[in-house]
Structure formats: C-alpha cells, structure tokens
Image (tube, rainbow over all chains, first blue to last red; front, side, top):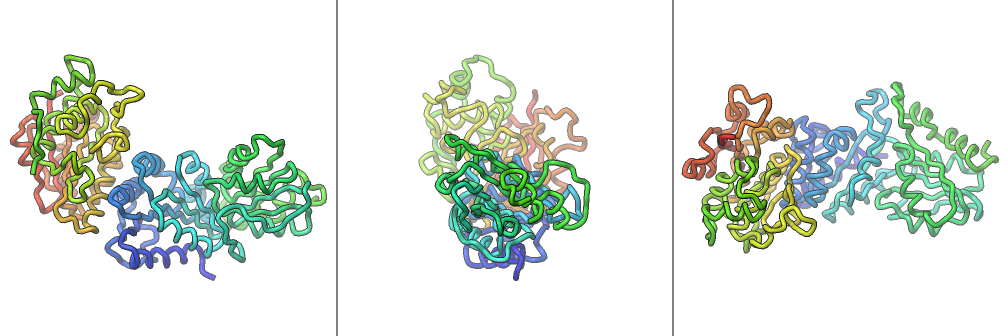
Amino acid sequence: MSTMRSRFYELAARALDDDQRVAVVAAEIGLSELPDHPRLVNVGIREQLMIGVAAGLAREGMRPIAHSYTPFLVERPYEQIKLDLGHQDVGAILVSTGASYDSARSGRTHQAPGDVAVLSALPGWTIHVPGHPDELEQQLREALRTDDRVYIRMSEEANDAPVHARGLVVLRRGSDAAPVVLAVGPTLDPVLEATSDLDATVAYLSTVRPFDAAGLRALMRGTDVVLVEPYLAGTSAAAVASALTDRAHRLLALGVGNVELRRYGTGADHRAANGLDADGIRRSLARFALPAAA
Amino acid sequence: MPTTTALGYDDLPELLTRLTGDEKHDRAALSTLDVLWVLYDRVLRVDPREADDPSRDRFLLSKGHGPAAYYAVLAAKGFIELDELDGFGGFDSALGYHPDAALVHGVEISSGSLGHGLPIAIGMALALDAQGQAGARVVCLVGDGELDEGSNWEAVQLAGRLRLARLTVVVVDNHTSTYHWPGGIDARFAIEGWDAERIDGRDHEALERALGGTGEAPNVVVAEVTR
C-alpha cells in the first residue's frame, strides 16, 4: 500500500500536467519526489516566502499547493497564512508531512501537534485529517476544484481501510445510553480495537473544519462524547461544546499532550505515551464512562 | 500609457487635508507622496475603469502605514470617490490606517504588517510569467525600516536568482531603520543580482526614468527622502 506522502507526490505531479492553474510551491522538502516542471517553484529554505509566493500566485488566478514538514509549513509562516492568504482573501492548499509525532526520532523541532488548533483559530479554513491514502486522494482532488483555503494533514499512521464520507459517519452503533466515540483520521483503527467488545457508538471524521455539528447532534442519544484526535488534545473540544450548547453532555477529549516530552523513539512509542493506542484509549474510556472497559 | 487625470499634483495637499483634517501632514504619509504620484501619473499602466485588466501593471504598497498619500493619489486618479476621503479611519469608511484590498477599488494587496508585499509580488510575477502576460509589470513599494523584516530578504534573494525582470522595488528611504544599512540598501540588492540605483525621491524626472524598469533583471530604486 502506498503511503499518504507517496500518493500526494503522484497526485501533485499529475495535477501539474493536467491543470494549467496548478502550481506547487516548495521549500526544498519533497523536491526529490517531484519531477521538474515550470510550475514547480522551489523557493529554497524560505518558508515565509513559500506562503507569500503561493498567495501571489493565487491572486493571479492560479491554484497553489504549498508543501513542507508541518512545523515549517504551519507554524513558522503563521502570520503569512493569516495575512497573505486569509486577509488577502485568496486560497491555497497546504499539505503537510510529518504529523504530530511521526518524526519521533527528530524530536520536538520537527513536530507540530498544534497544527490543527492554530489553523482553527483562523477563519475560512477547510481542514482534512485523512486516515488513509485514498481519503487523501479524494480530499486533494476536491480541493483542486475550488479556490478555498484547505489544509491537508498527512500522517505516517493510517487505517487499514479508507472511509469515504464528507461529514461524520457512523461505523458502529451502541445502545442509546452508550457514549459516542468520535475517531478522527488515523485514530480509527485503535478506536475500533479498543471498543470492539464495548457498548459504544463509533463515528469517524476526516474533515474536522468545518466541524460537522449537525452530524454530531443527529447522532447523540445519550450524554457522553469521547473525542479521539491524533493531534493536540482538545483541539475540537470547543467545536463539540458549541454543537451541543443546548444539551447536557460530558466530553472526554483525547489527543497528544501539551507537554515537552523530550523523548525520541518511534511513532508507536509516542502513540502509546500519549494514550492513543488501543490500550490507552481503553483505559481512558474506563475512567470516563465504561466500567466494562476496565 | 499613463492614465489621464482631472486632478494634478498641486491638488494633493487639499486631498490630504480632507483625509486627515490637518493642514500639516505627518512624515510617514508624505515620504511616499512623490513616488506614488510619479507611479500613478507617469509609470503604471492602470485604469480605474479596468482595474482587473489582466494586462495591467500591478502596484503593491507593502509599507501600508501612513496611507494618506496613497489614498490621495488614488482619489486624484479616479480609483476612489473624493467623498470617501472624509471618513478616513471611521467605522463605515473603506479607508483605514492600513489599506484593505477587499474594501478599496484598485488596491492590489492589503498591507500593514511589514515584510509581506515583496513575497506576494514574486508570486504575482511568477504567475504572470506562467500565464504569458508579457507586458505587465509588478512594482512594490517598501520602506527602509520595513527592510528590517527578514521575510523581505528571502524575497530579494529569490527574485535576484530567478531574474524576475518584470519586478521593480522602490524603497522609500527616509532613514527610519534604527541600525541603518552600512554599505547602502542598493548595494545589498545588487549583490543578490538586482539592478540597483539610488536617486532623489523628490525628483519626478529621475523617478520616472528609474521606475520604468531595466528589462534585464529585477530592479530596485532607492528613493531617498529627508525626514
């Protein structure tokens, strides 16, 4: 199976050939995977410039894709994302590689688990968290057909099978009193494993902004929501609270902890350290709502 | 082809007074006045009736603070109504202390935070190259203090290496940068591959000649004005 990253490079190369509006703006990262093309612009190791150039291209009617490691794509040029894209009111597709703790051996400098949170603080962004390369493909193809501001968070973690849906999709239904466990992107497989023998409703979401509030409201029968996000814990907690303002509810928001962990190792090590593997999710469920999970 | 005009350079003080209510005007606004006038009166191929013409020249005011001179010139050239000048900075006004391209006819970019215009200008120039818009030029105005921001130098380096000949930068140098530019701003662009010259920023003939571009490489015009 191809990775999200290899799929992205295939799709970007094809889009450059097929659509004259498309330009790819890179800051060295990814160049070895992309064929030379007149509309592939490498700006060198200059990420502020990468976003500014994307904005200028968009201002002239082109459809830029900007791509780098997450911290250098989202955090370093954050003001350019806010102003050059948002305030200028132009669109771009930002595609990151190196999700949360994917670059575990590289340490904190190459990790940005706050990516979805900080982009959520800006208006007008569509944010995709694909859980499978096929989902990435669908989301990127759709993004290329619009002029919207779209962020696609690629990850090395992926689910065994894709789930194709625009909004929240129910994968398993528990009793009316059962908690709704909302798995985002690549957290789905560990969530399914953790809940396989529990009375829980499991739903999946790979597009987190705009947040499918209507889908969540339609699904809720009981009071308990468990949000499982592969990035900073609580990133979508406000969106859940906003969706359920008029309903008594309890929320457990799982995700990557907001700490300087100062550990290397593998992504699997970090998934476990953040309680996002099946065992960790099951432990959290037990503490929150489901004694059967203990 | 310069746009025709009903109002002239001598009318600008009255327009500025209408904007600010002051008989005397602050230096940030006035430092750019002559450069802006020469651009809109003699250099840029822009027309308020066809502000979205793909073949037009693009002018990006990156130094967005002190925009009164910009608004006055846009009004004199018919991009904005004279009546709009009266509400400057008000809740219902399109004209703020930093320009918003979504609100003001003919304004290419919103600016205010320093160091954003030049990277966007490079993206525009690359797009115009890709689209085969042979004649359209991209002119970006920055301040000498603004050049403190490192994002400008990311852009200066790349534009020089890519030889983006349709790009002109005019630096209004009123010596506001605290730590100055030893060796000169023009020399710093030149070493990155730009055609560079320093001129008197109040000399309209010199501005007209220098702002026309050199056709070979990106060019910078350092327009010196006294504080």
